[in-house]
Length: 462
Image 1: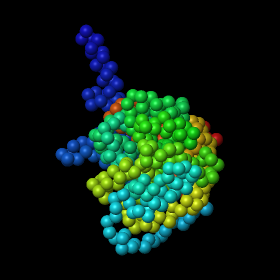
Image 2: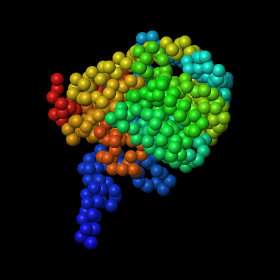
Image 3: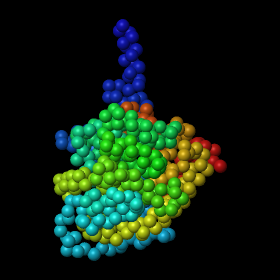
Image 4: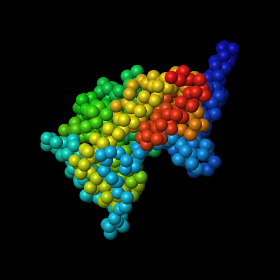
């Protein structure tokens, strides 16, 4: 009995690397140990938990700083940052303001739900693009202006009742922090299948509802996979959830839609809502992605009046509200006809960049699981690379040596370092590649990839 127990202990020790729960695989990789250390955190200061201070993009930037990125960013290809190019070079796109007039109102504290003209402009945009011919329309009272998407998510989380909240894997890294901050709900992971191209099926939603999940959070289009739940499938999910669950729809990448021949169409849950005040659907979007103004920190939540009133009020103790002068400047940007033209220009431009990156990767020898139909991200499978670089963290480390930044897939497996061995994560062999930056950065990034592959004798170069 003792001998058998000893064998079991030895096997466990080999798997975990000892009593600290770190596996032999992780102990043999410096970059994995750095990840684990950053996300467990030590208590050098009694009141500090440093593991709460960093999301995936921040962590990758910090590692890049160690290699000189902060001193000479112009020498780097940052394919990790989740932001689009912000210059006024896209054909057909309107010019962004270079200066802003600040009114006397702009000097004052603003309403924590946003100024009424901005709230009305958002409501008008959604009614024009998504509520034509429908009796139920949005009003300004259905809109809350928030200082960025994360702030919107945090506000929503603050007003949720006791609930099971379902979220999908892989998904946006910042959800991890939001899901761990509040104790008024229990977060339930819902894994999606690589073999199914990470599609969200209505049947999967129904299964979650049947087991008691009453809040479902997802991005659509989806970060990091670059896949979108189309109008028909989205309508089926909403019909199934109506009067049974609250849907939180992160639609920040809605403008980056390549499924309708780049005609400017934005796919949104707003299309399928029956009653804007009864359907429990909260939509988050803003100027950050599809208007290419991430520095403005102007976003919005659209939903039933009761939800919006609570979301607006809790801003008083969470974030203080959105910058008033930037709200005032944003109102005229949201004229529906101009937005349609802007989305059309955006889609053509970013589809061309997607096609460039896809061609470069396939020419190198990568076999893509699918071509993204939305966003500006590519979920790159590394499994067929040599072992030294066939996981996201080690590929990321190799790219740093070539002054290229990507985001390891492990960050999109929400809370992985506390749940399982990193090497067992379904996101372990992936990186997220952004084609958000300008074309010269994409070219430099793909050149860096080629150097990494050549250094490791991966894929005979064509």
